[in-house]
Length: 356
Image (cartoon, rainbow, N blue to C red; front, side, top):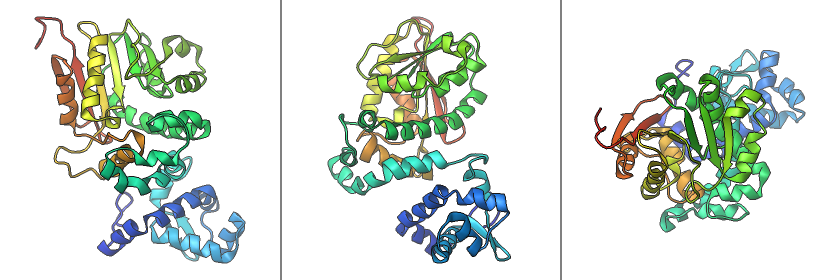
C-alpha cells in the first residue's frame, strides 16, 4: 500500500481481482458479518488463534479468512497479529469516517445474484436480471414493494449514499430562493429533511410510491420538520404532480431511465412549474469521453440488467441537453459538484425574461 489513500497492485493481481471478484466480495462480506474489523480494532490486533476464538470458528477457517483479507490489503500484519488497514478504519468500521456496510448489503442481497444476466440483458436490451426477484412490476422499484425486508435494504443504502452526495450540493448551491419544492422519487426523504433543517422557510413535498412514503414519514421525529416535509404517494412518470411548488428536485433519478424517458420526465416537470420556476437535476455522472469514472462504469450495468432495463450513468452534457429538449429556456450546468456528481439548474423563464 503506497499511502493511506492509494492502493497499488500489479497488473496480474488486478486481473486476479477481476476473475475472482465474487470470492473477493465474499471475503469482505463475511468479515462484516462476523464483525471482524470491530473485533480487531477493539483488541488492537489478533493472531490466528485469537481470531478463531473471537469469531467462534476453527483455526483453519480463521487462517483462510485472514489470509484472504490480508491479500486484498484490508488487513496488515504487526508482529504475529493481524490489524486493520487505514482503509478499513475509514470505510469498513461501523463508526468510521464513511461506513460502506449498506452498499455491501445491497450488493449481497439484491444486485449480485442478478448480474449473471448482464450478457443476456445486453442481447435483449432489457432488465433480464429482474427474473431473480419475486413480485409484480417491470422495474426493481416495483418488485421491491412485495418484499419489505429487501426494500428496506435498498432504501437504507440509497439513503446513505444520498446523504453523502447531498453534502456536496449543500456546500455549492444556495436553496434560499426556493419556497416550496417537490422532491420526486425522494425515497426516505433524507434530502428533504436535511434541506428543511438548513432552510427554515422551505417546504418540501416528497413524491414516491405509497409503500416508500409510508416508510419515510415514520422516520421524521422532529415535529417542526414534520410540518414542512410532506409525503405525496404517486407514480412520478404518470400521476399529476402536487401543485403550488416553485421548484422540482430530480435527484438520483436521471440514471434510471433512457434519455428519451428522462426528457419526457423533465417535460412533466416543466409543465408542473410556474413561470420563473426551476428544476434541479442532480446525479451521478460519467465523464464526457465515456472512459470513466470507475464508479460510473461499474454501476451502469446494474441499471440495464436489473433496475429499469434502460438507464446508465450519463455525462453532464446529456443532462443539459435533456433539460433543453424538455422546453426549459435556460440551463446552468455545474459539471463538477464533487463525489462524481453534476448539477443542472433548468429555468422556466417568463416570456421576455430569457437571458436576464
